[in-house]
Amino acid sequence: MSGDLAGRVLAAMRDVEDFPEPGVTFKDITPVIADGDLLAEVIRAHAEPWEGRVDMVAGLEARGFIFGAALAVELGVGFLPVRKAGKLPGPTVGVDYALEYGSARIEVHGADLPDGARVLVLDDVLATGGTAAAGCELIEHCGGSVVGVEVLVEIAALRGRNLLVGHDVRSLVTV
Image 1 (cartoon, rainbow, N blue to C red):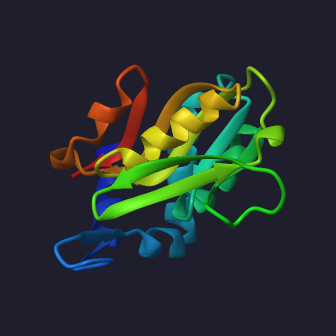
Image 2: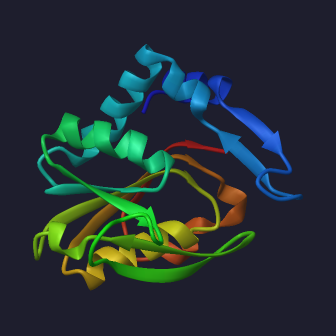
């Protein structure tokens, strides 16, 4: 990605202190998605390294849905929503994982993931890596093959990549 695009993404983002809990600085990407031209450039930049290499994009709730669905359209592949527990109807497959401020569970409709599908896991921010690692574990448990993890922003100091060893991790912006 060009430094110009990274700079515009950084300039558009906001830091929200003490959200969702005291001591956590939330990286607010809503100004990025509110700018149609910037959002389109971000989606193109996310797509470029993965063209022809994936069968499906798995977007992590909730902001990964925004980028993930748009990226799936750009790549001409399916989209798999990875949801918080209890949000999907019918039979689901799930995994529990640790967050930097607690714990959570994510789920998918395993039947929507073709066996052996090459899946790109996508989220907005890579912090401690717990959500992305859980997403990868879930995809693999359901018979998919994780080809990579793509994020808009990586917070390098939190070392989230350490939980994703063995996966091709790409970020458009590193802070």
